[in-house]
Image (cartoon, rainbow, N blue to C red; front, side, top):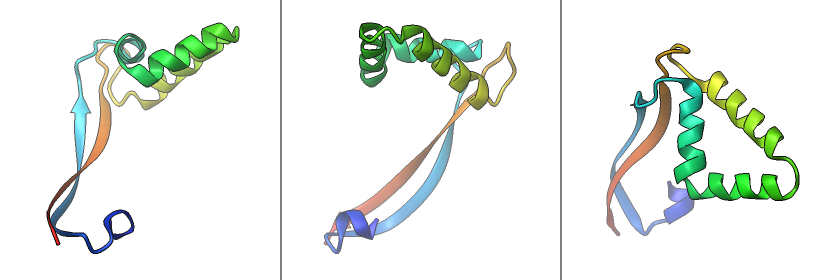
Length: 90
């Protein structure tokens, strides 16, 4: 964190945590969620459509969801790591 903030922040807590995402029944539902609601994915899909690569984009997103699913094909589970940083301005 020192690379990002230098001496401007005195961190009291730095904890890496894992968030389990179980809101999606099937792994590819996770990708559909991002295609419908997440700006960068929406833009990437539009760019793929405009360049004739939408099928390739969809296949890559499906493969990603299949690979990173930590659940089963009928009960998807994904993990997202996050950092909890608590500090005060130095």
